[in-house]
Image (cartoon, rainbow, N blue to C red; front, side, top):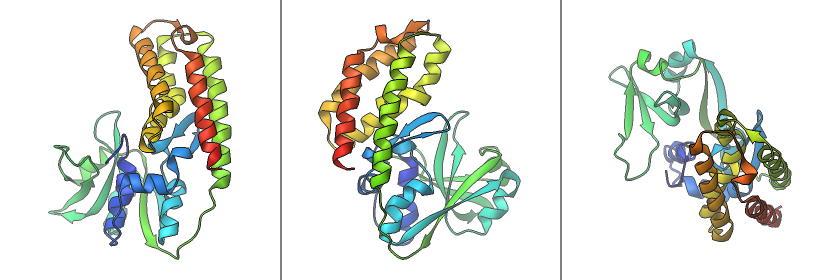
Length: 263
């Protein structure tokens, strides 16, 4: 992993390594145009490394001759399903609320061996071994299992996705303005961290840093600090009295202009 929250992108790179393809998470992100993509999924705004799954990964994979396929597997069938695969990516819980992408690489001593997608200097283990019972305690009731197949190289049209991203980012700016214009409870503010603000004040910053857009990133980091200070106050607040909304809207407008160049 070479950027924040990139475990699934590092996972795609690790899957490809088993097929002799040498790449890394940031190469995948840059070549698929990830910094210019935003979406709204199930009422949650998402960008950067939170854009996960075959729909997104295939933007990189298909042009290099691979296709990702995903299967949703019931928990009770997961272990039998994995035993029939050579390599696959899935998400497991490494703590109560923290799900992490790992790569199944086969059985070792009757246990499921998982390649751990991690930062190069991390002291975490390179591989994780789980008994059937241990693995099942770490997954959801339905598990998405992803694997690769070799395919013909295919050029992917992304212009419509980029135009959609502009629309999503404009909607996000309007929703943020509306949310910040009224007093919100501490619970509402904490909940908005992931549903509303993360896409622009965390993952958006990560993407801007990835492409060297320091000016927009600097503006958003100021607002990010203001937002985190508001969260720490843990009391009802009207966020437009705590955040520099003019700076935030200026940064979002600049981000939209940046995306427009790639549309």
